[in-house]
Image (cartoon, rainbow, N blue to C red):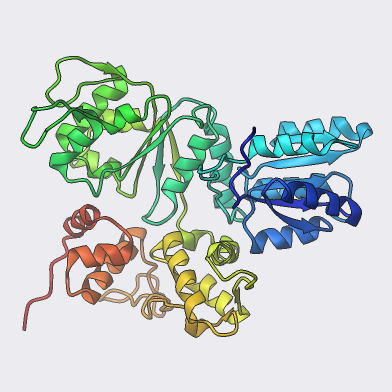
Length: 455
């Protein structure tokens, strides 16, 4: 007997015929799925902004926004979302073209309920497996380019280096690449190189044999070997030390590892995706990062834009985070007042998408009547300041013109603010910023930050 998909799986059905909608809803609901319905493409798009779904089933021919146009808009912002087209026999060539553009499948009318259910179940993750991550907010040109690159990079075997500030969603992109690749059925092993102590990272990555060091009471398989047949995601790769860089380079060159205390090499077939918010070329220049390892990692480089560089995406992201929050059965999703939405769009977001998610969680708790107002938003009071004051000596282009902050200066000020608020307790400041303790130690050293003298 075929297992039903997870009961949390949600399917959106779109058709202008209410009778067909009712039949499809009943058939899918009987299979343990949550079903949402829309009477047209415009209604479907509005619903998708409020409610996350796992799959869309849409009629191809509808008044107003057609199924074809609906697919293209959905695919542009959520390329990983499965989409099934319902088509008449005479419009099969058009449906085939949509599949070539990225639609998951199509069904010709009339069709059997079992056939539809089989296609839906094949596209939804099985029970207990998380659905593919979605990169919402693809309206901005910057994010559209990232989504296009993900589509092109995922089917290949090339290594990928993801660059971007902390909180921009580097792990989400890595997961999306993995799940859209030919290795998607294999494991995705995530290694946080920033939070793992240097003396333990070697054993964590490469494994060890029993008795190879104190407390090595049994053999341990390393995380690289755990990624056999899948993808190894090395987050915060800029934090690894010289010895680990050398060992990692050897693995990338030869496809083999040697556990700590071992004498034989073990072959491992895994794709490597790395990510960092560090300036690796600058680290290379200072001798802190191997140039040959850098070029091994950057087969393809993806630059994730900061949230302040894609403000068009903020409304969709905010609504998505609100829709994903747990709420009592039957309770509506919290909404944002126009003033709150403007506040979000104008805010500089030093913590990027991660910070926006936390702000939405707090806003949903503090709001009254299900509508979030500006006073419900837990934003740093100093962050939305209009423009930084010019340095001593005045601005170079005449009076009244302030110098814009560079990305490094923005980051330095954000770290200083967090350190000041936590009394220079680095672990608490790291938690406030959403970064690891190792990363904040690196940043404090990078910017030469020192605590103020005690009075």
